[in-house]
Length: 85
Image (cartoon, rainbow, N blue to C red; front, side):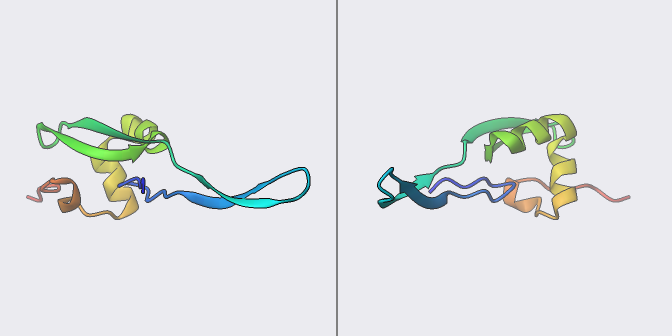
């Protein structure tokens, strides 16, 4: 099952409905890609499985900002998190 690590998008389940109104189950999978993202705060690459919508957001705002805004754990992605001085 495809799942985005950042947004949690999963597959959608519904019905195909024919002209005769016969219903059969169908699945819509999210467009999930495996990408290597450069994290300048850490100075390293991180491999993540994310949807293309999340990829656009991370490209625009940065991975650290996305994680902070959505309350995710840095450790999940192999990051140490922001250093406080």
